[in-house]
Length: 163
Image (cartoon, rainbow, N blue to C red; front, top):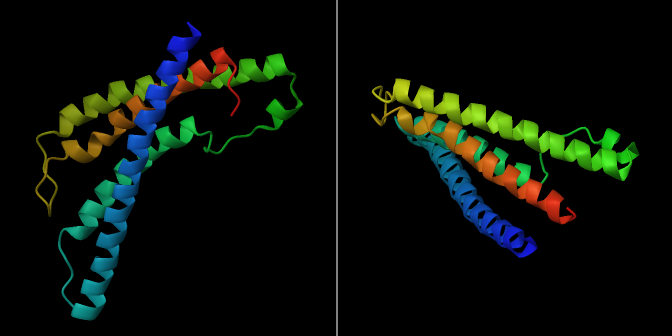
């Protein structure tokens, strides 16, 4: 059983490696577009009509994918003073409880995010004319990433892996 859990964790880690590279690409796209927008507006005097919108959409994807990625790496803001003073059993119980609550939150993101995606799929963005489904799809996809990484954190707790 432990071998299967370790295999699942390795798969989740490879998944996170892909998410990490996706985050790098999104940040690069956002940075280049914003720099070019500033250059075009103040130096050339003719701003781009689409760059701000694409940068905004990139930031949405960066936020939701990054939240799931940071959750797995334990890089989200947390109040851990209780964990420091609690015993090992209570500390472990609280970590599992946080992951379970996060699973519920991720399920809500997925369920209602898909509902919103369905509602806005016929709308288009003003300057790029892409379907508004694409930026709103970041919400349920981010929920899926959080859910996958929550499973990885539960596996860590089961096999006793240290952070």
